[in-house]
Length: 163
Image 1 (tube, rainbow, N blue to C red):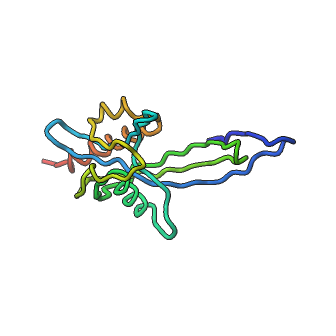
Image 2 (cartoon, helix red, strand yellow):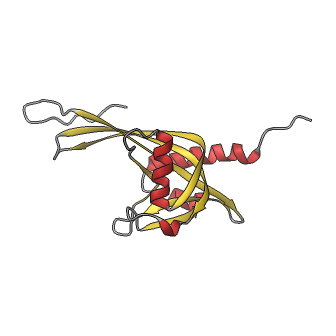
Image 3 (tube, helix red, strand yellow):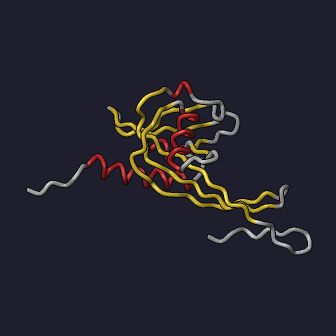
């Protein structure tokens, strides 16, 4: 993945800062099938997966559990690591380039309620996977749901039996 190459006046390249966050794809299996939780904002129409930045001394898994709990209101348990998303962005105001890595985990709810989410998002709702594909604002998160769906299919199928 090649970084963007903004330059300051005089031809100097901007410094790069590396950022990390963690979150997850929370799913449940019910009568209508598999559903996942998305977080949304009414003012800009953005829908995304819950995630956030580690606090000092916190592991990626601890960060994912805390951020998902805060942003969705759900207590969750990690089942598996799905993968990572990496991307670049720039801030001309700060004269900085950023390389961000977001770690995603497959999670199941074990308590809590989406009514208890924090104020970072206005909306926290369950959607079918098909609806999630349509609603998610960023293609890299759509791809993360695809990976989660593949992992989930393996988990729901269970171990193969030899007869």
